[in-house]
Image (tube, rainbow, N blue to C red; front, side):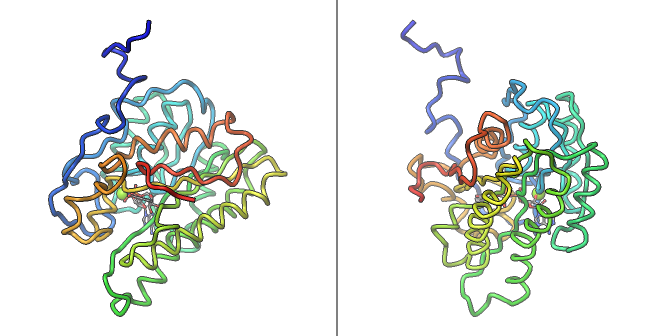
Length: 302
Ligand code: NAD
Ligand code: MG
């Protein structure tokens, strides 16, 4: 049959219109923000992601798993057959509980591990708790991050600079270091970087430079761990509609136009990121190491 039928919704879709081109109203939430309060709501794949057993029996720790991209990845991992430990900040409990319920409805275990990863000791504890409660660890997704826009470097405080580095890259190194001790050959690490790694916005100097560091760290660690059979890769999202953007991640007045300058002409939804993480975690990508997979609506990237 040469014609595509409308009923085959999942295998033939126009990427321009697969999700609506949103114009979010100006809104603000205190950091870190909740998915539950976002207008419009995001698509984390809870109603659409269909697994095919690609991560059956895997034990995954995902940071920032309560909302946005991390929540979409957690849902996808569970639908692919993995048990998932969710790391997030205590104030995000309402979002985390929702994702836990979706994972359990998918027939997998969800372990809630609230805590602040900018705290050096907590990074170690987080991994130990995940290992203990999952009964091991063979997949790590370092996805947590903070992004606070500051228009003028004169207003960028030392405290913010340090806090962004602690959360985005220092914690990633500490969590990876603690995790590797427990990971058997075949395990995977996927780190969330950003298009900001190559195209820094003037109002995101601290954030964008951590994302460049994450790319470099991922490529270095990938080479170091490959001989042990542990693969490290990264995903670089473009503009994705998540709570990060309304908790000072963007200037408020920029929200209605968010993502419209991409070749697809719209912001991405968190669920559009999930397949990249599934691919890099599944053994089908066994020869893919130190790669950054760009999921950004078509903006050219190195
Ligand atoms: P999000 O707000 O839903 O997720 C970020 C998560 O990071 C929060 O839910 C929170 O749980 C976690 N976090 C932040 N500080 C923490 C801390 N101190 N301790 C523990 N957890 C902490 O937003 P998102 O957009 O889904 O972000 C996920 C990742 O994607 C981030 O690394 C972000 O930099 C990256 N990213 C997002 C976009 C985008 O446009 N949304 C683009 C490129 C990269
Ligand atoms: Mg959150």
